[in-house]
Image 1: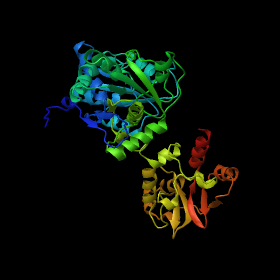
Image 2 (image 1 turned 90 degrees about the vertical axis):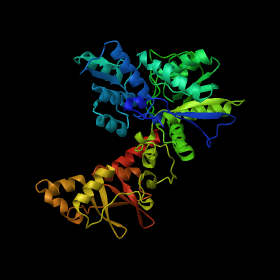
Image 3 (image 1 turned 30 degrees about the vertical axis):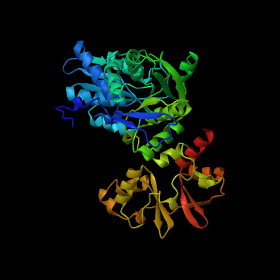
Image 4 (image 1 turned 180 degrees about the vertical axis):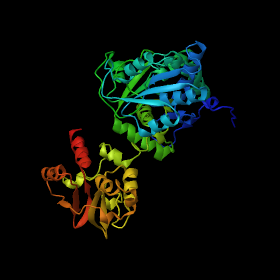
Length: 455
């Protein structure tokens, strides 16, 4: 077993796992488990490489501040390496990133700047442009710039590529990659062009990204939006070398998420959203192959960063990625049916503190108060605030002393227009069906329903 003197020595030399239960057709599909790096992703490799190169070139000195634009994992790699080497770190992150990633970054000591994910390159709030501006204004600041930094692909040309080559016993027919900064696909292309030029490169690209279209047509289209994190772009990164890409697959968010969930169920691998995209593309490539091939793709990061998102059934349903039974009435609006045990609620005799902690745990602003299977009241944050702002000891008082008894019941057949009028008054609709409490309908439930209708 490997013994290391420092955590940075554990970066690289990750295992290779053969897929056994997912349908790869005639092919053998292997997963390079980059989630086994100490920072949890493939980006540990480039973080160490880019910082080491900057040190060799004299661009960093004790007390320097690193600044970078990141979709999350490069930031985590940089935060790990910077913390070990004693550098400060400022990261500019688009606002679609998971809270697990952001919490992890802050725990490592990084300073986080959140910016918009709905703007394109050239906009002052575009994450890369904002990071470059911050670097110019930071004394002794160094803009890492993974998208144009040659030490990024070098990490894969000299590290990841040779590892795969040896692990696969010098027999690799195809490599399936995604593109974020393009370091992985560029570095591996350079390595395999020397040792096995016949190895095919396959691009896995989220729907909404411009890269698959560029590979297929040579033209740069207009970018859309996507939920998958870490891969896909609205431009061609300066370090990108896509010349050896023979095939490109566009993978929807829904397919990416369902594939990642299947990977956990069938192979026991807890992987992130970009891995879902890569594995989905790799499986398509394998099933389309007329001859047996040995194919490699990557588990780019760990799924523990996405437990609140694609591994959360309620989040998946709210976004429209999990299809629920459709009733054609107000039951379709209830995100958390009471009968499924998914509603957080309190009893009349529970303390206000219990209610408050439950609100925070489940990120609710109000809770139904239930006794003997019936809703007897509603408690929201303002009820608790009125009770405790003058005397925090009132947190010990019973919910029944502060709950609102102004309840509005609706039936499944109630129209959305009638429901909207109820919600406009600051109330929630208590949906009863066949004489039983079915669930609470809030403004958020209605907004999610309307967004799913639009999408």
